[in-house]
Length: 122
Image (cartoon, rainbow, N blue to C red):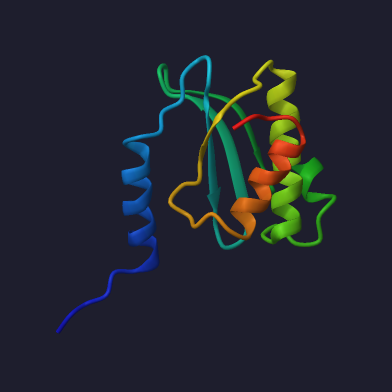
């Protein structure tokens, strides 16, 4: 009998393959996105030293207070704006987008588009 892999295992394999080609540097750090069933998280990471430079999530009080739900397209757009604003305040203009093995549509696409609108380049 053929057993089917779970969606999470498939996503992790995709992410592992993506990470072979995507790496953040000091000049162009990596914007990593993760979404769970209830929340979304975004980090800007310098992989050369392993530091998280900027992070934001729907768990943050200032973000969560403005949202009705924390895991929909509107929440993703808000999170994209917040992470871009924090990055620009730290002097980060260009990033490499790491979708985390998720399909580039819906929430992931909304977060990326909102970050681009707010001034990040990728």
